[in-house]
Image: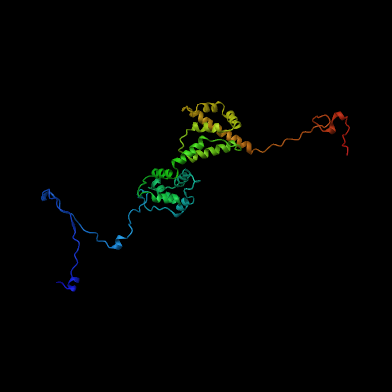
Length: 298
Protein backbone atom coordinates (compact mmCIF):
# COMPACT_ATOMS: atom_id res chain seq x y z
CA UNK A 1 0.00 0.00 0.00
CA UNK A 2 1.40 3.36 -1.04
CA UNK A 3 1.11 6.49 1.02
CA UNK A 4 0.17 9.84 -0.49
CA UNK A 5 3.71 11.16 -0.18
CA UNK A 6 5.10 8.21 -2.03
CA UNK A 7 2.62 8.69 -4.85
CA UNK A 8 3.54 12.37 -5.09
CA UNK A 9 7.26 11.71 -5.34
CA UNK A 10 6.96 9.06 -8.06
CA UNK A 11 9.03 10.16 -11.11
CA UNK A 12 6.96 11.10 -14.12
CA UNK A 13 7.25 8.87 -17.17
CA UNK A 14 8.60 10.46 -20.38
CA UNK A 15 7.31 9.64 -23.82
CA UNK A 16 9.68 7.19 -25.47
CA UNK A 17 11.20 8.25 -28.82
CA UNK A 18 9.45 7.06 -31.96
CA UNK A 19 11.45 4.25 -33.49
CA UNK A 20 10.63 2.97 -36.92
CA UNK A 21 9.95 -0.82 -36.60
CA UNK A 22 11.86 -3.38 -38.57
CA UNK A 23 10.35 -5.01 -41.59
CA UNK A 24 9.95 -8.63 -40.54
CA UNK A 25 9.45 -9.83 -44.10
CA UNK A 26 13.06 -9.02 -45.04
CA UNK A 27 16.26 -10.25 -43.45
CA UNK A 28 17.56 -7.90 -40.82
CA UNK A 29 20.96 -7.64 -42.46
CA UNK A 30 19.30 -6.16 -45.61
CA UNK A 31 17.39 -3.48 -43.72
CA UNK A 32 18.64 0.01 -42.99
CA UNK A 33 19.12 1.07 -39.39
CA UNK A 34 15.96 2.34 -37.73
CA UNK A 35 15.33 6.10 -37.89
CA UNK A 36 14.82 7.66 -34.49
CA UNK A 37 12.62 10.79 -34.62
CA UNK A 38 12.71 12.92 -31.52
CA UNK A 39 9.80 15.11 -30.47
CA UNK A 40 9.98 18.88 -31.20
CA UNK A 41 12.04 20.30 -28.35
CA UNK A 42 11.22 23.98 -29.03
CA UNK A 43 9.51 26.03 -26.37
CA UNK A 44 6.05 27.53 -26.85
CA UNK A 45 7.57 30.99 -27.31
CA UNK A 46 9.78 29.67 -30.10
CA UNK A 47 6.86 27.94 -31.78
CA UNK A 48 4.83 31.19 -31.77
CA UNK A 49 7.57 33.27 -33.39
CA UNK A 50 6.81 34.59 -36.90
CA UNK A 51 8.79 32.93 -39.70
CA UNK A 52 11.67 34.87 -41.15
CA UNK A 53 11.88 33.06 -44.48
CA UNK A 54 10.15 34.03 -47.71
CA UNK A 55 10.89 37.77 -47.60
CA UNK A 56 13.03 37.86 -50.72
CA UNK A 57 12.12 40.31 -53.47
CA UNK A 58 10.48 39.19 -56.68
CA UNK A 59 13.19 40.88 -58.77
CA UNK A 60 16.52 39.08 -58.91
CA UNK A 61 19.29 41.60 -59.50
CA UNK A 62 22.47 40.19 -61.07
CA UNK A 63 25.59 40.38 -58.96
CA UNK A 64 27.50 43.63 -59.43
CA UNK A 65 31.27 43.20 -59.25
CA UNK A 66 32.19 46.84 -59.83
CA UNK A 67 34.04 48.49 -56.98
CA UNK A 68 32.60 51.53 -55.19
CA UNK A 69 29.28 51.23 -57.01
CA UNK A 70 26.56 53.33 -55.42
CA UNK A 71 23.25 54.80 -56.55
CA UNK A 72 23.07 58.43 -55.51
CA UNK A 73 20.07 59.75 -53.59
CA UNK A 74 19.41 62.33 -56.30
CA UNK A 75 18.89 59.54 -58.82
CA UNK A 76 16.26 57.90 -56.62
CA UNK A 77 14.53 61.25 -56.26
CA UNK A 78 14.50 61.68 -60.04
CA UNK A 79 12.85 58.29 -60.50
CA UNK A 80 10.31 58.98 -57.75
CA UNK A 81 9.31 62.39 -59.14
CA UNK A 82 6.90 60.78 -61.57
CA UNK A 83 5.63 57.54 -59.96
CA UNK A 84 3.14 55.18 -61.54
CA UNK A 85 0.15 54.48 -59.30
CA UNK A 86 -2.01 52.32 -61.57
CA UNK A 87 -4.83 54.82 -62.09
CA UNK A 88 -7.15 54.45 -65.08
CA UNK A 89 -5.87 57.64 -66.72
CA UNK A 90 -2.23 56.50 -66.49
CA UNK A 91 -0.50 54.86 -69.44
CA UNK A 92 1.87 52.00 -68.47
CA UNK A 93 3.61 52.16 -71.85
CA UNK A 94 4.35 55.87 -71.35
CA UNK A 95 5.75 55.08 -67.90
CA UNK A 96 8.09 52.44 -69.35
CA UNK A 97 9.27 54.88 -72.06
CA UNK A 98 9.88 57.61 -69.47
CA UNK A 99 11.73 55.23 -67.13
CA UNK A 100 13.94 53.92 -69.95
CA UNK A 101 14.75 57.49 -71.01
CA UNK A 102 15.98 58.31 -67.49
CA UNK A 103 18.01 55.14 -67.00
CA UNK A 104 19.53 55.23 -70.49
CA UNK A 105 21.72 58.17 -69.50
CA UNK A 106 23.23 56.29 -66.54
CA UNK A 107 26.66 54.90 -67.26
CA UNK A 108 28.66 52.99 -64.66
CA UNK A 109 31.88 51.09 -65.40
CA UNK A 110 31.42 47.32 -65.41
CA UNK A 111 27.70 47.61 -64.60
CA UNK A 112 25.05 46.58 -67.10
CA UNK A 113 22.26 49.06 -67.71
CA UNK A 114 19.65 46.32 -67.28
CA UNK A 115 20.87 45.76 -63.72
CA UNK A 116 20.33 49.44 -62.97
CA UNK A 117 16.81 49.25 -64.42
CA UNK A 118 15.97 46.25 -62.24
CA UNK A 119 17.28 48.04 -59.15
CA UNK A 120 15.47 51.33 -59.77
CA UNK A 121 12.12 50.23 -61.17
CA UNK A 122 10.46 49.42 -57.80
CA UNK A 123 11.15 53.01 -56.70
CA UNK A 124 9.07 54.28 -59.65
CA UNK A 125 5.90 52.58 -58.39
CA UNK A 126 3.36 53.76 -55.85
CA UNK A 127 0.00 52.62 -54.53
CA UNK A 128 -1.58 49.56 -56.10
CA UNK A 129 1.34 48.84 -58.43
CA UNK A 130 3.84 48.70 -55.57
CA UNK A 131 1.52 46.32 -53.70
CA UNK A 132 1.30 44.16 -56.82
CA UNK A 133 5.08 43.89 -57.08
CA UNK A 134 5.42 43.06 -53.40
CA UNK A 135 2.93 40.19 -53.82
CA UNK A 136 4.80 38.62 -56.71
CA UNK A 137 6.51 35.29 -55.84
CA UNK A 138 10.05 35.66 -54.50
CA UNK A 139 12.81 35.40 -57.10
CA UNK A 140 10.38 35.14 -60.01
CA UNK A 141 11.66 38.00 -62.22
CA UNK A 142 15.17 37.61 -63.61
CA UNK A 143 15.41 39.98 -66.61
CA UNK A 144 14.22 43.43 -67.64
CA UNK A 145 12.03 41.92 -70.35
CA UNK A 146 10.38 39.68 -67.74
CA UNK A 147 9.67 42.71 -65.55
CA UNK A 148 8.17 44.75 -68.40
CA UNK A 149 6.00 41.82 -69.47
CA UNK A 150 4.67 41.22 -65.95
CA UNK A 151 4.05 44.94 -65.42
CA UNK A 152 2.21 45.52 -68.71
CA UNK A 153 0.08 42.39 -68.40
CA UNK A 154 -0.91 43.38 -64.86
CA UNK A 155 -1.82 46.98 -65.68
CA UNK A 156 -2.96 46.44 -69.27
CA UNK A 157 -5.28 43.40 -69.32
CA UNK A 158 -6.59 41.94 -72.61
CA UNK A 159 -9.95 43.64 -72.11
CA UNK A 160 -8.29 47.07 -72.23
CA UNK A 161 -6.42 46.11 -75.39
CA UNK A 162 -9.70 45.10 -77.01
CA UNK A 163 -11.36 48.40 -76.06
CA UNK A 164 -8.55 50.53 -77.53
CA UNK A 165 -8.43 48.40 -80.69
CA UNK A 166 -12.14 49.06 -81.12
CA UNK A 167 -11.57 52.81 -80.63
CA UNK A 168 -8.89 52.77 -83.34
CA UNK A 169 -11.06 50.80 -85.75
CA UNK A 170 -14.13 53.02 -85.18
CA UNK A 171 -12.19 56.30 -85.13
CA UNK A 172 -14.06 59.30 -86.60
CA UNK A 173 -13.16 62.95 -86.96
CA UNK A 174 -15.32 65.06 -84.70
CA UNK A 175 -17.60 67.78 -86.03
CA UNK A 176 -15.58 70.69 -84.62
CA UNK A 177 -12.18 68.99 -84.94
CA UNK A 178 -9.50 70.19 -87.34
CA UNK A 179 -7.34 67.90 -89.45
CA UNK A 180 -4.31 68.27 -87.17
CA UNK A 181 -6.38 67.74 -84.01
CA UNK A 182 -7.85 64.54 -85.43
CA UNK A 183 -4.39 63.30 -86.43
CA UNK A 184 -3.00 63.98 -82.93
CA UNK A 185 -5.92 62.19 -81.27
CA UNK A 186 -5.50 59.22 -83.60
CA UNK A 187 -1.79 58.99 -82.81
CA UNK A 188 -2.56 59.14 -79.08
CA UNK A 189 -4.72 56.04 -79.46
CA UNK A 190 -1.93 54.23 -81.29
CA UNK A 191 0.60 55.18 -78.60
CA UNK A 192 -1.74 54.09 -75.82
CA UNK A 193 -1.69 50.54 -77.22
CA UNK A 194 1.60 49.82 -79.04
CA UNK A 195 0.64 46.15 -79.38
CA UNK A 196 -2.55 46.98 -81.35
CA UNK A 197 -1.34 44.86 -84.26
CA UNK A 198 -2.47 47.21 -87.07
CA UNK A 199 -0.06 47.74 -89.95
CA UNK A 200 0.87 51.25 -91.11
CA UNK A 201 -1.24 50.71 -94.19
CA UNK A 202 -4.29 49.83 -92.09
CA UNK A 203 -3.67 52.82 -89.81
CA UNK A 204 -3.55 55.31 -92.70
CA UNK A 205 -6.56 53.75 -94.34
CA UNK A 206 -8.55 54.02 -91.09
CA UNK A 207 -7.54 57.63 -90.56
CA UNK A 208 -8.34 58.67 -94.15
CA UNK A 209 -11.81 57.10 -94.02
CA UNK A 210 -12.46 58.83 -90.68
CA UNK A 211 -11.97 62.35 -92.12
CA UNK A 212 -14.73 64.63 -93.29
CA UNK A 213 -15.14 65.25 -97.03
CA UNK A 214 -13.27 68.57 -97.02
CA UNK A 215 -10.16 67.16 -95.36
CA UNK A 216 -10.32 64.09 -97.58
CA UNK A 217 -10.30 66.38 -100.61
CA UNK A 218 -7.31 68.28 -99.18
CA UNK A 219 -5.45 65.04 -98.62
CA UNK A 220 -6.36 63.85 -102.11
CA UNK A 221 -4.96 67.04 -103.59
CA UNK A 222 -1.77 66.73 -101.58
CA UNK A 223 -1.18 63.03 -102.13
CA UNK A 224 -2.66 62.60 -105.58
CA UNK A 225 -3.51 59.03 -106.54
CA UNK A 226 -1.71 57.52 -103.58
CA UNK A 227 -4.66 57.97 -101.23
CA UNK A 228 -7.07 56.16 -103.54
CA UNK A 229 -4.48 53.45 -104.08
CA UNK A 230 -4.11 52.91 -100.34
CA UNK A 231 -7.84 53.06 -99.69
CA UNK A 232 -8.66 50.46 -102.34
CA UNK A 233 -5.71 48.17 -101.63
CA UNK A 234 -5.64 47.90 -97.85
CA UNK A 235 -5.15 44.13 -98.08
CA UNK A 236 -2.09 44.37 -100.31
CA UNK A 237 1.10 43.97 -98.24
CA UNK A 238 3.62 45.36 -100.74
CA UNK A 239 2.88 49.09 -100.66
CA UNK A 240 5.48 50.28 -98.19
CA UNK A 241 6.92 52.98 -100.55
CA UNK A 242 3.43 54.36 -101.14
CA UNK A 243 2.65 54.25 -97.45
CA UNK A 244 5.85 56.13 -96.67
CA UNK A 245 5.05 58.73 -99.31
CA UNK A 246 1.53 59.10 -98.00
CA UNK A 247 2.86 59.66 -94.49
CA UNK A 248 5.10 62.40 -95.88
CA UNK A 249 2.09 63.93 -97.60
CA UNK A 250 0.12 63.88 -94.35
CA UNK A 251 2.98 65.65 -92.58
CA UNK A 252 3.21 68.22 -95.38
CA UNK A 253 -0.53 68.85 -95.25
CA UNK A 254 -0.37 69.25 -91.46
CA UNK A 255 2.44 71.77 -91.82
CA UNK A 256 0.60 73.65 -94.55
CA UNK A 257 -2.58 73.89 -92.47
CA UNK A 258 -0.55 74.97 -89.46
CA UNK A 259 1.11 77.74 -91.47
CA UNK A 260 -2.26 78.87 -92.80
CA UNK A 261 -3.69 79.08 -89.29
CA UNK A 262 -0.69 81.07 -88.03
CA UNK A 263 -0.50 83.50 -90.99
CA UNK A 264 -1.98 86.94 -90.15
CA UNK A 265 -5.05 87.97 -92.07
CA UNK A 266 -4.19 90.44 -94.84
CA UNK A 267 -6.04 93.74 -94.71
CA UNK A 268 -7.55 94.64 -98.05
CA UNK A 269 -7.23 98.23 -99.21
CA UNK A 270 -10.48 100.15 -99.32
CA UNK A 271 -11.36 100.87 -102.94
CA UNK A 272 -13.18 104.05 -103.76
CA UNK A 273 -16.51 103.78 -105.53
CA UNK A 274 -18.48 106.62 -107.00
CA UNK A 275 -22.03 106.89 -105.70
CA UNK A 276 -23.11 108.62 -108.89
CA UNK A 277 -21.82 106.40 -111.68
CA UNK A 278 -20.33 103.46 -109.78
CA UNK A 279 -16.82 104.08 -111.14
CA UNK A 280 -13.56 103.47 -109.29
CA UNK A 281 -13.18 107.08 -108.21
CA UNK A 282 -14.53 109.46 -105.65
CA UNK A 283 -17.86 111.09 -106.32
CA UNK A 284 -16.07 114.43 -106.09
CA UNK A 285 -14.09 113.54 -109.21
CA UNK A 286 -16.93 112.02 -111.17
CA UNK A 287 -16.93 113.26 -114.78
CA UNK A 288 -20.68 112.84 -114.92
CA UNK A 289 -21.12 115.83 -112.63
CA UNK A 290 -19.02 118.13 -114.86
CA UNK A 291 -16.77 119.06 -111.97
CA UNK A 292 -19.69 120.14 -109.81
CA UNK A 293 -19.18 119.22 -106.21
CA UNK A 294 -21.77 116.89 -104.82
CA UNK A 295 -23.21 118.24 -101.63
CA UNK A 296 -25.30 116.44 -99.10
CA UNK A 297 -28.59 117.99 -98.26
CA UNK A 298 -28.21 118.74 -94.61
